Image 1 (spheres, rainbow, N blue to C red):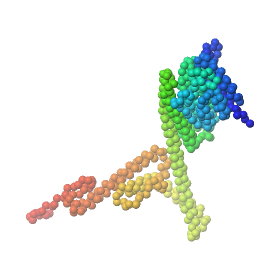
Image 2 (image 1 turned 45 degrees about the vertical axis):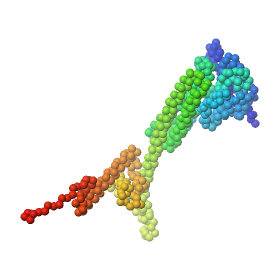
Image 3 (image 1 turned 90 degrees about the vertical axis):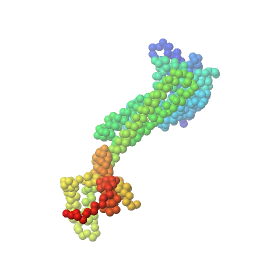
Image 4 (image 1 turned 135 degrees about the vertical axis):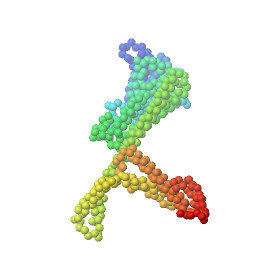
Length: 514
């Protein structure tokens, strides 16, 4: 049976600034690690108290990095025995984010400064290619949860009373966080450590700089988008950049699923950018932060960088949506071509089925032995007609287009003609029986151009028919005596009225009519 204290964590505690003045030729480290496994809480508490006493003696702040490798509830009990007001919810959320892949965040709190400043931020992290398999090349972007807690020295139960120093605790689960921070505050960067000791609020801009690897996220995203773009436009080209063999190239539907997964990752990245922006805006309003103008200026720079990254994410999202729409368009055209191939099969099977139904009649006394000959004759007749009509100037596509244009014209005429009785409707042009299947082999742009030309021809035919109808109506009115006296419409333009016909002059009796 496993012990209640069967956990595994490593605590990194900082040394004093005197380490920089060491005479050793090697670059000393500012942090020392202590791994804790299956021990009782007093061991951890005594170690923290000893290190805290050294820091307070020099008037410095203690920086502790708690890296959890194996979690059990006993960890919270152990840390609560060392710290009063320990933020157990931050630790639980860090473990939950790591275990379930969630991205719970906590922006800095401003309502109660007596318990310190608490925050939980997820930082982007790109896994090296050696850590991913060939089928998981798109899943290299992840997030590292890091909890930040600024607390007074009085929160350590074994510390001296009356101490007013502000200490820092960082909680993480990945060794990359501890390595990055230890390297960031290395001996070569003494200025960073000294300003952190002067103002502990520098931990926020420093950790944003050390762990904010947004450029790596954009680089890997652009690389994948470029691969998807080339694959969509050159379907015959093997996707070698994705480490996929020629025999394992993804189909269009599989590619659409990969694009949806990439879109989900990109949306998650944009959500974390929004949280980073909100956390920076909140932190700029903290009274502890407003006391240092240098910290404010650095946080303003990080906020501008976050806004720039948000614009970059919007551009990449639009590019990804364009590729997804192109994939679906290609899939739709491929399905249309498949339907056209089915029509070719129907071209052969329709005459055969007609002959089969003819021989299947119960009252038709014809031997079944004649079925192969009849089927062959019917098939040859259909093939001969299909080849003979184009030779004599008959175009199937022109006929289909004219029929479709006629149906469109009838539908529009029935909609706008006031003489059409109520309840009567023209056949819909969107009926499946009127679709021109011969055009499905054409590219999408040519189909759109043909559709626009077809609509223009329909409008011209309607205008000509309307003018002809008005002209016939005007001629009919001219033939009436009443309209002859009062004026009639012009034959060419029904809106122009002609002058009334003048009465014929009365001839004198002496005039001779020739």
